[in-house]
Image (cartoon, rainbow, N blue to C red):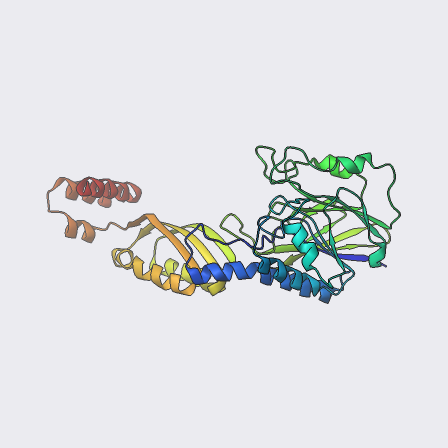
Length: 376
């Protein structure tokens, strides 16, 4: 019988979103969305008939979160109808052996008897959960480390019996997950392969790997984050359904899981029609969309002077908007020159000459420089 796994991680429950200055109502929605993402993942796993639910680290944003956040996570995970929920400590919610978050998780689990906390560097045989699988975890014990936690697997004298041998780790893989200072439990691709396991379920980087909707027989996958959390996270939330069959094949199918969508865009416009089309496209996700927009190019004078109205209308249609129109300019026409500068003045003569010659870019640049001098 195949083994079906929902692979997620990096939910960062307890993230507060206080640092960017979001409106309070939006901030609360962003906080709530992370828990909702976990609930949807559990619903999806149940609908798919998954036997195993793996959280590959950073279920929580830090090692100290409100007790209610812990209880909310446990309530969501306990709704999983499969055999086992396995949760790995990541570098944000790293394992502290003498108290803190992981002690509270154990003590609060209550009747949630299919929860398995992967806090030790030791094999976890899942026969007691009705699965012919063994998990080999690499839990984080601190926020940063220049050493990964895979060594114990190489040194293991004998592996427990099991049909599937599965690694679960949190950290960077060189060349795949950014780690410029080598401080996030760095791993090598070859190191993972040589461990000789059927598959590695990885967490840490917030973008899935490989970044495609289907993958077959990959030695490892990153799940990405199921709920985007900022403008450097430009996908719509990601997770995997991974199926391991009796022949040894591993099939991974990507899921789209997020509520909110962050976009950072630089757009060049030259007409009212292009502005309206841009507004239509950006408003497609409505209250789910957070946009950072850099607008550049030139607009006819009427549209340029009404751009604040356009931004206001766009802002009302989105969850959040940051705009920068510092590179957007008013289109300079003969009528504009006539209205702004006295005849025979140097600016009038220069701009008129450039306009007559059709030197559009030079005309706009000259006008900008003249305006800066006049306003200084």
